[in-house]
Image 1 (cartoon, helix red, strand yellow):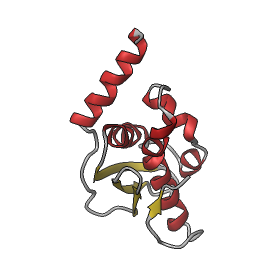
Image 2: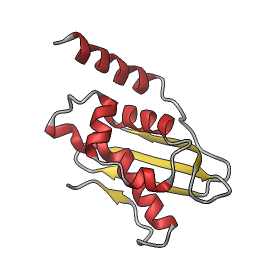
Image 3: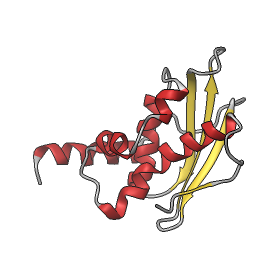
Image 4: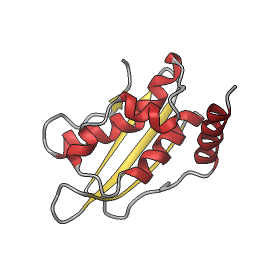
Length: 139
């Protein structure tokens, strides 16, 4: 194990044990929930937009799951404030794996991208571009 990968494992464990932005917003602009049936991870994000309707002012999450899914939600929750909805929509799997340290096994990718997908689907529902159904990671 390299020193770099050990550092990222420690970061994942820290975010898992001490999640940032964990909880619920009093009056979010939108909320969305998703799950990963293969692992049992469940995450719900609350997002509050600024007056421009495009910039994320605050984001929180709550849920249960493995260390990777919960750490990814915590890390994403830290990153979201200040981002625009378009910035979030442009994110992909590589952004999440890079945030987590880049060394995510193929079996754990669904865990790593659940938070990103939940927020992206929540944006589409908020904009009226998709039906308000729970996100399920099945790819």
